[in-house]
Amino acid sequence: MVMNDEGQLYTIEGVTAGIIMLVTAFTIFNSGIVYTPGDAHISDMQIQQLGYDALLMMDTPGEMAPLSASPLALMILNKSKINPDTEFVHSFPHYLSLGTGTTDIVDSLEYNATIYHRVTHGGVEKVQSYLFSSSPNSEVSLLTREPAISVTRYVWLPRSPTGYGASEYDNEKQLVLLEVLIWRR
Image (cartoon, helix red, strand yellow):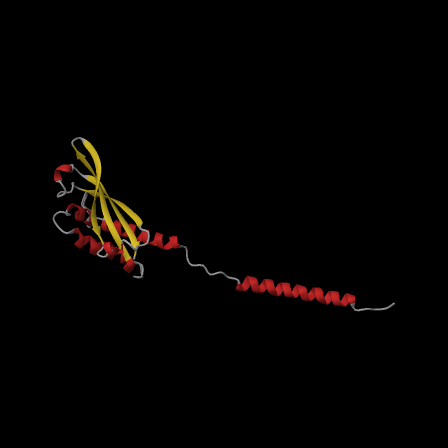
């Protein structure tokens, strides 16, 4: 019988191929991590929650007396007597920045606040709206802004607002809807 090396060569070739496959699989699974940026909706949800929290804080009455008006309700009621932009422009960003731990998001936010209210005129009930307030740079950034996030809050008013055609308003208590559109510059 003649001995040859064919069997040994096949064995060495098989073991070498197995080692190459294992090293290749190890390299692919350990170094093939794909880094993806965070989901874009996460920052939108954070901004929306900041907006909800800010409106909630502004709509919380300072005293616990029954039926006392909140600072936000007073801003809406006194729109014709004072410049609400002075109050809302300072209060809203202030409440946005409370407790966030970072100013990166808050410093780049712009907003536009609109009030929707019920009006009865001549026996016909309608919903009207008016611009309540906007951030100082909102007009500049309207053309280049990112999509806006809508934050709404129903605000209870102890009496109807005056100054916007007072004859159009009911003289009773009412809820108004405050919608704030928030976007990043």
